[in-house]
Amino acid sequence: MSHLGKAWNLYNLMKSQWKPYEELRELQDRNLRAIIKHAYENVSFYRQKFDSAGVHPEDIKTVEDLPKLPITTKQEVKENFPGRIVARGVDISKCWLPHTSGSTGIPLTVAYDEAAEDFQKAAALRPNLSCGQKPWDKWADITSPDHIHDKKWFQKFGIFNPIGVSLFLEPKEQMSVIEKINPSIIDGYSSSIYLLAKAVQENGSDKIHPRIIYGTAELLTNEMREYINSTFAVEIYDQFGCVELGRTAWECPAHSGYHIDVEAVVMEFVRNGRQVPAGERGEIIYTTLYNYAMPLIRYAIGDIGVSSGRKCPCGRGLPLIESVEGRTDAFVQLPNGRIFSPIIWTILLRPFSDIAQFRVNQEKIEKIKIQVEPRSDFTQDTINHIIRDIRHVLGDEVHIEIEPVDEIPRDKSGKVCSVISKVEIDWGKV
Image (tube, rainbow, N blue to C red; front, top):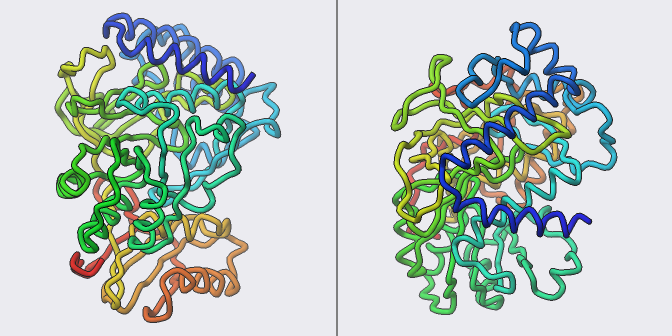
């Protein structure tokens, strides 16, 4: 029933985006009341948290009531998984269990049962279809090799069938692979698409003509956007989300902000414990509305955004946010001129369970220092393994130093910036 579940959810989501905002808000409040009641009755972590704050489910009637509830931190989710934060009666062995990277905070695991996974994946497809993608379009996805899996039965017929292109290939190699695919859709980390555009420009390729490009996972700067758009003669669509909640906001063809998936989440913007008015910067706080297996109530994701009071000219009732901030990482360039997207560090270091967090520091072009917060099982073998894996991708011309530290300092926004480089990038050497 899983594929039917995704199809049914997608059908409903494609319809509901056109409902008036007031109707969507009523739906959001109704879904909020239901998940709050469920979390209190079936998740011991939230029962204790709500009781300690003197808050009961009946106190939460609308989104405006959410500040009555305490914030849920990543550390709390990590410490209480799975025993106290997965709902009673959920068989964890039958759940989809994606892991966060920990590059901007603390790595953790999230549990989605079949119903939640179906909804999450349908919500991820809605912006693609809304921006003009067809089920049978050829689709190139620049991603980690870990994300390139065997095809589902419907993908073997060319339906919603992304073809994985390894993030670790040099941009020129990626360009060659994508030329052979000849895709209508290009999807991937925003910085990777930017580097692909650089390679296309530098090598004079005229064989890549996507109809649609989607960027995600990283901050898309105006410079990156303009360069990608001019290179491919399209307007890239930016999408926003996280492992814990899936896709949560996205650009439509009007490019007038990011539509919030209010059927799936509540997104608050908070500063000094209070919700900020439209147009002001605040920390993004999420409440999931569909994952009954592992509800996240007022969950602090660690990102900063600007809310919006405008309506989109496209006519959708989904409200907008102006922008997402606080996700900017640094590109790293090697002495040979090769430039690496910041996402590669997440992919290289994510497999090491004996590391709590990391920060990559490049002060000189020939030296990279990686600070790590070690766990109890961290050893010299871990250091050797990390260096070996990095050298396999970067080569031997850069000195790699691993520095265990007690705590990696956060920046002013409260985030752990995962990559810092003081090397000025020479974009002429892609």
